[in-house]
Image 1 (cartoon, rainbow, N blue to C red):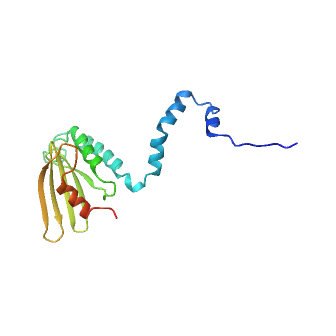
Image 2 (image 1 turned 180 degrees about the vertical axis):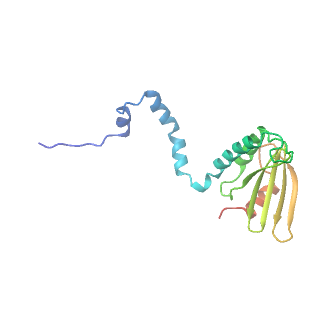
Image 3 (image 1 turned 135 degrees about the vertical axis):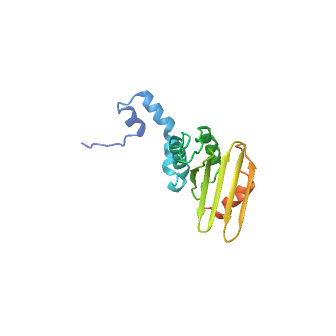
Length: 164
């Protein structure tokens, strides 16, 4: 007598596992996102980390005088402005820091060697300042409505802060 073993399919295993139909449906629906997260390079996850940093900053800086010198509170709507910028930033950039400003806004700050770049996110505009090496600076204000980063800011980021 010969006993024949056959592999069990994933579908058969999941239907015989005692897991509810609702749980199986949810597992099926989130599978593409879980797969994307596990296939995504770790170096690209800096955006998720920054979103968590923003939440911490909002909690720590919600009261007037959070800096000990009378700083304005960081308002919750700053979270949405920062998210708009994060969605527009390339994944292959060096991760910035999120810095609370005493005027109640949040800034992105990048540093590499002797180059520093800060972008403050205000309602309907981005205020930026860059030190681009020995004796070279660039600064300005650009309108921002959430659809695209201003060219001046994109140029500085791609020239000085690509993660290569």
